[in-house]
Amino acid sequence: MTLQLPKGDKKNAIGIMGGTFDPIHLGHLVTAEEVRIQFNLDKVIFVPTGRPPHKEEEKVTDPEHRYLMTVLATINNPSFAVSRVEIDREEGKSYTIDTIRFFSNYFGSKTKLYFITGADAIMEIITWKDYKELLSICHFIAATRPGYSLHKLKETIGESCPEIMQNISIVQIPGMQISSTMIRQRVSAGKPIKYLTTDAVTQYIYKNKLYHNLSG
Image (tube, rainbow, N blue to C red; front, side, top):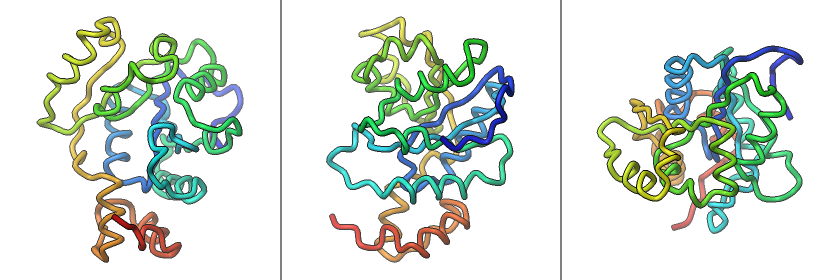
């Protein structure tokens, strides 16, 4: 695992931001920084997925490309780090519970873990592997765009598992309209992606000819 944190470096609160990052964009970065500030996190660690179980039917870009783009996008923020823990995992599919167990052991019981994800993903949390254990060892932060209706989220999860809502915080983030899908489609269509992701990631995409021949 690549993680720029010294051994024995004590941390009180760590944010874990998992995602496909195909590619990473400004919405991800704004979300991570806003959550870091609001929750007084020592670090936010970006964790590109290896083989995401929820995207088995979709074509996902090679993990090394996604990892390198994430490094390029975050390298100028000393409060951000990138981990290869899921990319280098050999067991197959990447499950959030395995990643959180890893970081729980890595940092120790005195460090509080926050898992940052989108509100749409939180809607399906009761289908995640070992979700009850997951909620017992980390706090979830559901990031959403301003104006997004939170009623469905609270209704869906609150009615089926009301205890879950106690361990989920909802944060509204500006700039959440940007999506990785939008960037891939624009590149494929020959449209510019300036200001949707960082210049370094934009250059990497064009240099490596990513997303140029998408079908459908």
